[in-house]
Length: 385
Length: 99
Image 1 (cartoon, each protein chain N blue to C red):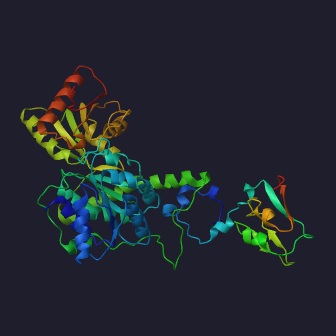
Image 2: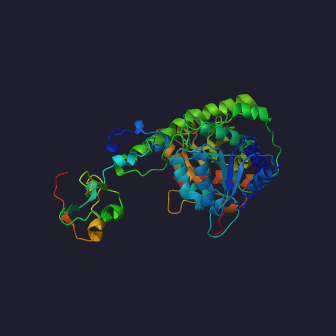
Image 3: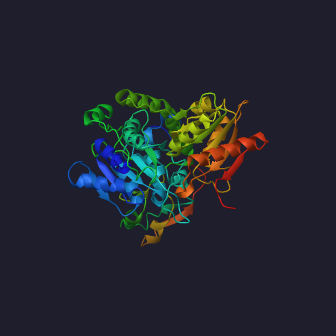
């Protein structure tokens, strides 16, 4: 089954009340399929045909505020257009779920995959997952709704899946029976909602005298969602046998060099790790599944004993300290006496293929240059000189 | 609100900062924004109510004696009432520091 179709089927099984989305490559198949499901009566939901992504998410904010389970999805320019509303959804603590089929931000115009779109809203206050394959996308739709709607969380959730590399790939997907979904995901019971019987105001003005308190409360909610995230993954694992962690490790034991990836690169990198391990090289892989809240403790536990970390970023922070993942990783290990050196590669932007041998080349280069004394290595990989 | 915003701690805020008490904007003093306050000359007042109608903040109320009086808790001192008063009964005067 195509991963986009599986994602749409999961949204159907999650029994959403509202779908509001605007088609954009490479997210289109998700919306198209949901539109079919609503039109042919398989999904009893309101499907809003909106005129832009700004409206798509605005509708979700409104519907979620009334207590309706709401879904949207987008990519690239569409996400940029809805970025204003992403901050509003999280500030209002509305547990909307959005799938981002990650695609490069223009310019130059590109439809292919990297993470520049979601990095533009990195600090928007949504819980953010990165998925590695179709099964993870499908599973995380249920996980996201149960987690976001938990009374102790009440935060919107983004599921990142790489455009084309995942969205348009046909994979075997293990579907859940509806009873299992219903068992895992209870109906949404909003804490506050817009209802004439009990009027409330959402989105009120805040003066400087109270604004900082609102942000502290929001950040506290995000930080304390970590235990619920782990708990939700555990419950999902107990139900399906598929367990997830904030930072996944692959052959990381005794590794001197650890590759660090986010998203679908994890699968290719694991092939590269296998090839290097066969040659007797002490190379392993860390895959960051949870991007917000960033799993600092889990990351340190997995990474601090290594000699070097080779980070694969998929977005350029122009004029910044390297890619966004490397930036976070450096913050995570700052201040620890025994910490690995970090070498950051921006690779595979705008969907350029990165093969297992490319990963090996990056590890080679990082190991040699760090050995020679280079610190804070950073380059955009594979650029023709 | 039961107490001023500036006394709320972050732990006390409702989830999503929703306002749970309808109509509590009436507790918010906008009167301290003003520089000029309207003063009514009762001799000139013809009780037409144009000040009451034009006031953008609905600060005017009808008093027991039949005069429209601006509630200075809400009045922002815009001066529209003085501008619209057909008999010139309202003048805007600098408000002294006494709030």
